[in-house]
Image 1 (cartoon, one colour):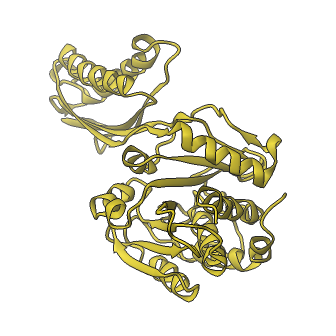
Image 2 (cartoon, rainbow, N blue to C red; image 1 turned 180 degrees about the vertical axis):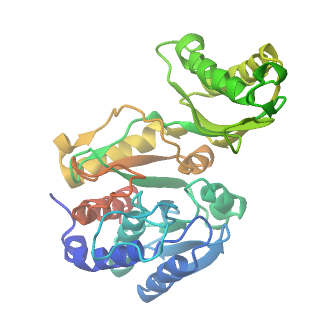
Length: 389
């Protein structure tokens, strides 16, 4: 793998940072140890300006090149938060905090960007300013939006912004991306059903919210199969169903919760409209009432065409032309980096975590440290290529 030699030499050190982060996972915005580790390391590298507290617990580092007369400012973003999952890896550096683990590789993302920051602060072989962004609360907390709302883009003069996420199943050290929609919008659906509770032996005297909820779950599956163009992509998944407390009582209420995902604004609108109509109409058929709270969370992640070309070219330089998929099939995951791409041109790229890696958000997942040289080299070469000295 034609990685940057100095980055390759840092791999063991970067891996140690990653494993330390893995052992001490923190959630959403509650990142006192993680943010402090990032801040202290950036400071020790001689980064020109280290600013904590952006978006509550985000950390930003500013690294000036040997020259700055180009006026260019390119930002690189990594996420820092873990997930509320009990780890089952059995690794010597497994999480020591019950119920929390780095099951999405954010420990690796943070460590690789720290490695790139160390290299860039040492060499400064570029003309412009590199901004390294360490973001909280990617996992459902919209930390990217919080940082933007806190003035991230304007305060640091960011002109372009790039992201990276590891992907299990892709060959180790390979890359994949595409222009346009790469990841789906991610919305949350909350459904409250009100019926008429009573004795389970007299169902005729009740309006059974379990029956109503089951009918809603089934009927919602028709939204994608019968309302969506077969060439479009959409997902409606009900993932929680709460009703009742015992076996001989038909419950008065039921609560459903799920997610809705799309790759275009038009499909996103259609899914919301149909979900609302189906929930209300199905409840009415059974004599119940239902209310839908549809919350739009992360927008569609759309890569900008020109910046995607830049990302692909750098990835090919690092991994080789045969190891980069430039028109990768979109995935239905959500990613709040989409908020940054709505405001600035840029691109997100996937980096292969290995074909035999456990999946993201799985209790046996672990970031593959062998990806570090390629990932950190990608960041370094992206800065040096976009702002040549």
